[in-house]
Length: 432
Image 1 (cartoon, rainbow, N blue to C red):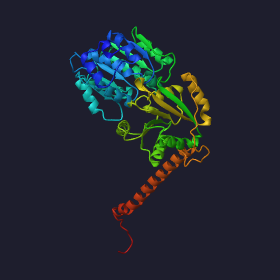
Image 2 (image 1 turned 90 degrees about the vertical axis):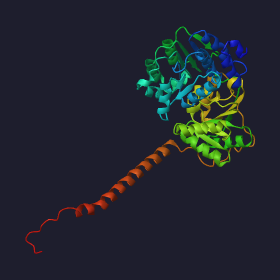
Image 3 (image 1 turned 90 degrees about the horizontal axis):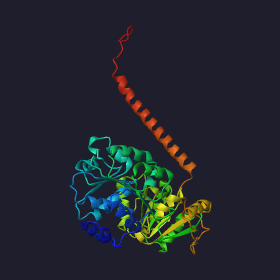
Image 4 (image 1 turned 45 degrees about the vertical axis):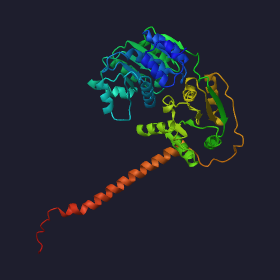
């Protein structure tokens, strides 16, 4: 089926053509017609299957001929990166319609976002925490809201946002339509769907959560101490042109980025300790080809959409199998193809087996020919937790001591001046 067969507004079809969409993905083909008919949607499909356009296009179709100046659609997303990506997709699809969107997320000033509320931008895309910050003020009432979307609902559950979602729902009027999109459907999410959806059309493209069919998955068994060297070797041999590399911790993301740059491989990183401006620059540089590698923690697993991303690397295994699915879903998006490499130490094999059970397949193991598996790592990428805590405590103790010494020096330096200002006592009984 072509997009023209979905009976979308002609201006939207121009936007679809401009962004390079040729035909609808399965989730778009199944979701758009019932959404245009006014139904609520409950859609469960793999990450990277085209869910964003599946909910944006029917909303935009219904807003094209409506007056501007009222916010009629709210999309709730788990991360800043995903919110920005949805707004970017909206701009592409709506470029011939005059419909505007704005992102609302933390880590930046609230004033520009307040202006979006006050001006009544057509579509707001928001993270739950920052949205609740705005709801404290009268300008953020959203009285004209008609469409509500919860995107990546299972990720919001993983991040502890479910109570925030319930608070958000108390602040907005009951929408005309609600679209609920998620890669997986754990029990707490099923409960929420029953609370907020009215006779939804249910779309489930798969019985179990799994990566997109275009992803070729490979496991590289390697000692934990040599994972950095193996990744460098894979990149130097040309096995990967570009790569999104996932680590478990922020500290390891920093150290791995330094290791790659030290070996002449341009890399940048994004994680929770980086400012929003730093994260935005890193992602933009990766998309533009300025950096060959982007190292990220799971904060980016749902928020990165890079056209034709060839490789995803699990440098560390994720803590839960579902996160593996979301990570590798960054490649092979919208029916494309891609590779997912996972570096697995012997002590991680049990976790890898759990991932294989979750995805329903045994992932082939590969050894890199000519790699020195018996070598000694040049340096550990992360200090043991005990050593790291001890170092932090020692630094804090040193800082406290410096502060105390500085205070003591200041007291001593001020003491003579203070005594010189006192009135001199008369000494009776003594000769002058």
